[in-house]
Amino acid sequence: MPFTLASVPDEGIPPLENGDELTRAEFHRRYEAMSEDVWAQLIEGVVYMGGRVKFRAHGAPHARLNWALGHYYVNTAGVQAAVRQTIFLDDLNEPQPDLILFIDPELGGQIAVEDGFLTSAPELVAEICSTKVSIELGLKLKAYERNGVREYLVWRTLDRVFDWFVRRDGRFTRLEQINGVFRSEMFPGLWLHVDALLKDDGQAVLQTLNQGLQSPEHQAFVEKLRTHS
Image (cartoon, rainbow, N blue to C red; front, side):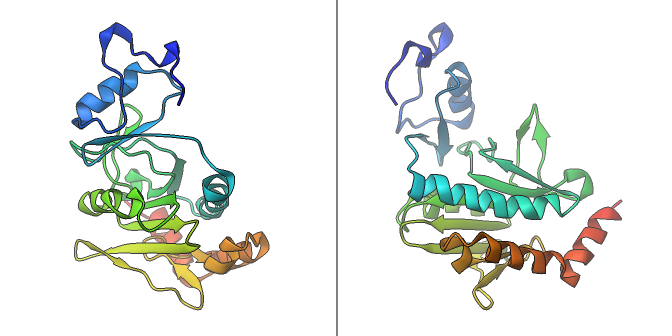
C-alpha cells in the first residue's frame, strides 16, 4: 500500500508493519490508531498487511462462496454470517477471515461478542487463498484448530482445490466429498457442489444448496435451534 499521511497513527503510536511480532493487545492498539484504509491481521504473533486483490485469484471466488454461504444463512434461522470479521482468538491471533458462519450464541453457539468484536472462534471459517503453501493452510490452520473452530474451508483458487477440515477429537481432519459435494457436519444441509463452484455454474450450485436445505437433517437442525432453551 502506498504511504499516505492518513496511514500515520495518532498520538505517536507506532504504525503496523508487515512482519512485526506483537501481542494481540499491542496489535489491536496500533491497528485502531491507523486509518480505515489499512487492512491487517495478526496470525500467531506476526503481522500480515493486506495487499491488492486479483479478480480471478480472489475477488470472484470470494463473491461466489459468499453467495453460497449466504444462501444457507438466509434459509437457516438461528445461523449468522459475516465477511472479513475481526476475531479475538487468543493472545497471538486477531484474524479477519474472508467468511464465517456461526450459531447465534443465545441458541447454543460457541462464539462470544464484546464491544462488537467476536472474542472466540466461530463454528465455521472459510478462506480464499492461492496455493497449498499459503498462510491459510499453515499458521492460520494451526490457530483455528487450536482455538476451537469446528469446520475450516479453504478454496485454493490457483490449484482449483477445496480443502474442508472438520474438528474431531480436538484436531482437524479432512472432510470427504460425497459424489462431488461437500456436506457440512456442523451445519446440516450446507451442501457445496465443488465442480459447479469452480466452473462458476451458479444454477448447479443453487440446485445442490436447495437439495441440502430440503433434507431431513436441515429441517431437524432448524427445529433444534428453534426450540433451544
